[in-house]
Image (cartoon, rainbow over all chains, first blue to last red; front, side, top):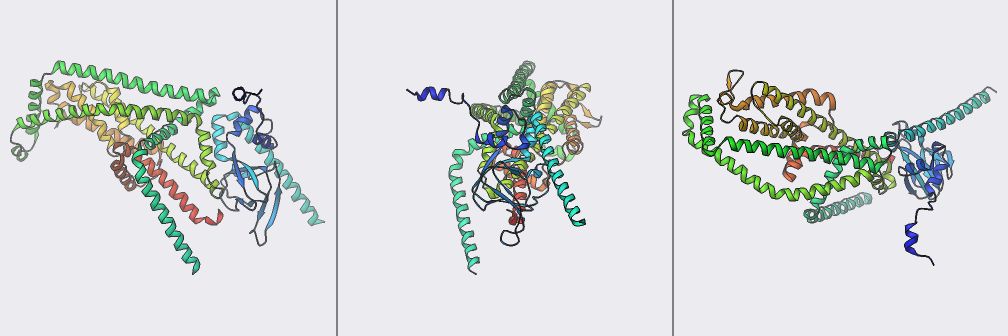
Length: 170
Length: 373
């Protein structure tokens, strides 16, 4: 027979990962993190719900941090929604966007719109700064990984540029 | 046309809601004011202590233990300060009462009165008819002070309760600060989410930089006052409790405009108590010209110099314009704070005005960039 009392006492012993941690584990920014570090990170992450068509942020709005898609889908666009909307990227579960805002005070360079009912995890500059204060090792790890991600993006852009230049010449 | 009408209707609706909210607040305010005050105090203590707790957490890697250590050190420090202050002041009072009986006290007042009258221009001397009156008035004043001290003792119980609650709130806030902040952020609607985050951060920054500035200026006033009092002792001022007087002056300095003058009072009282019956102190002159019985003018001058150094040299260099409010606004805020909450209100008036300024500037930003939300 199951006893509610005993169940309560041992609750948490068989600790399973939360959905947030499972999502965070897919993101390269948080690679090589220990379970303890993920738990620490989870305390800083903000879970937000968006309905289909909701703006997550608008182009030229002040940016505060990055978002990770836990559930749903997001499109990154420039231009207005009705006229001349140019879709730059369509992102799925596990993808992340807006990470540049972690480094500078520049406004957002595109719109982010939920294309399905979505659950996003937000990680923001001030939380990163706070983490850097309290747990510099973890803070450094995130910054180093972010550097890697940005470097990869830059290499991608470079090869695109080279390709387009060679096509122009051809 | 129709749109304009809807706008007016919306405005009236919002105004009505606002008025109802104000009316409701005015009704429940007397019941919740104490709790709100405790929470404000706890929040301010949390802001002051947060960076130390965070720094300690970085060293020992445990939040709860860091909070406990910082709070224990703080409470221990305050306890030791108050304990030794009370024991020293009672020792001082005992010595004073042993040395002086009531008759000599009246005679001393009479002597001070004569001394003061003699140093006044002749036309003023004629206005004061009798020196005995002055001695009587001074005795009355002391009686009033003693009776008000007795009524103050009854307020101590209430104060202790509030202090204990603030202490508990502070510990909880310090331990759970980041989670508390996260749950506050959770209630912000998506449209204003990033803006709300920025607003919370700016308020935190403004309050903590103001508090750090205040702490630095209080510490510098305390250190300079102690040095100044020790310097006066070299010239025979015979001041005791210099350490405590300095710290009290530093703390009093936290209240803008009024505080610096309050800070002088303990030093003057101690100078008076220690030098009563001492003829050299009674006839002491500042720079050999201005009569300064019991070194009172020397003390006032010393505190004025300390305040000038702090206000014009130390605070601008170390702190800068931490809140960046116009002096006129500071004075208005102080008056409003003082009217609502007394000295406590004056203490919180400037940071509250700073927070209001941050909120207003963010609202102005939102109004200007509404299309971006």
